[in-house]
Image (cartoon, rainbow, N blue to C red; front, side, top):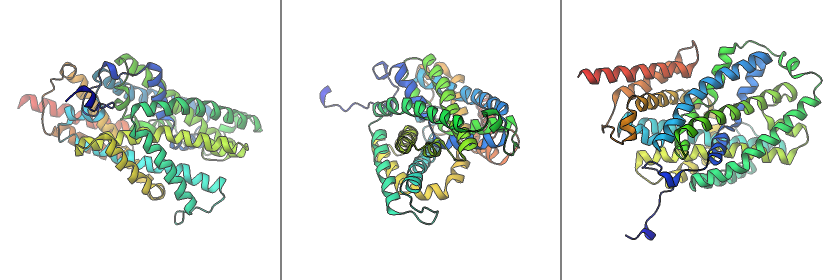
Amino acid sequence: MSKTNQKIDVDYTNSPVDASGRKSNLSMFMVMLGFTFFSASMWVGQNMANGLDFKGFILAILLGGLILGAYTGALGWIGAESGLSLDMLARRSFGEKGSYLPSALISFTQIGWFGVGLAMFAIPIAKEILHLDVTPDYMPWQGYLLVLIAGVLMTASAYFGIKSLTIISYIAVPAVAILGTIAMIMAVQRGDSTLIEQFAKGTKDLGVIAGAGLVVGSFVSGGTATPNFTRFCKSSKVGLIVTVIAFFLGNSLMFFFGAVSSIYAGGNDIFEVMLNLNLFYIAIFVLGLNIWTTNDNALYTSGLGLSNIFGISKKTMVLLGGLIGTLAAVWLYWNFCDWLNYLNCTLPPVGIILICSYFTHRKAYVDDSVPKRQVNWAAVIGVILGALVANFVKWGIPSINGMAVAAACYYIGQLCSKKA
């Protein structure tokens, strides 16, 4: 077959990203920063503002950001150095068939959050702009139409892959950051007390460690998919730096947006602040872009995961995932958020096993000589036990607890296999 007739997989679904597929540092920074612009993180900021004073709020962001940065930074380095997606890394650490477990977990949660994100866009607009009654039992047709339009657009950007994700990020990141910050400053200026005084109000029943746990938990599941994007970075160093800076800046902005919204406007996020400031059209623009940058990355990740399981092209799986997420969006929003939070605790154990496996056998990964196996039971058991501990042990930070158990299981399995 001639070269002109060969189909080029620009998303490198089943192979490492080569030198020709690597993207500029700025492009990767925009993609990673846009990934963290997630409206649900604003809800976390609201809870933190209610439970912490200003000093505690800042300390929680710094501590949680340090933990989240270390975790995602390691995955960012691995993705950039190996050029491999999360699912290709899982094939080497969990085994060919064992990789189906992390691929299924990441795909399921990301399709779920994609659907929730669509509803997070449609429901506020239906309520606040169209003045429609929306309840858990009723959604007017205009709301479903908004879900459908958003679903088609966000699925399209994920379908066309990393190039499309980059274009959306170049548009959305500056717009959300600048307009959101301006609205936040305007809200503070209209208040009758300082930021520190406003933070002093509320229950203040949250400790700094618990607040840091909220920071980590807000995006640790999405952060597990970091290799899917940093594999396009030019070097491992760039992958590390871009990830750490983008995650810290992006999450911090979302927390501040949510916190200021809560203490000055009584709303859930910067969207409601903008409405209160009579910035209606800007509010819609910012809300849509904010959700879009995370949703297309989530659907892109689910497409890679489903492709690994079923052996069907990423583009086809993105369409399937987008269809499911769009059709189930409203139901997911009202019925499934709590379940998704439980599932979030299963992903950090996956990420820590990828990290442990890579740095334990780094040379073999670089040389592409990792021994093939069907299932690495130590890794599989580590994820299961880690998820159980993360969900049901109430002490400490859930995601850290789950990662510690998963890593211990993995290394115990390594020792046992050497002795056998």
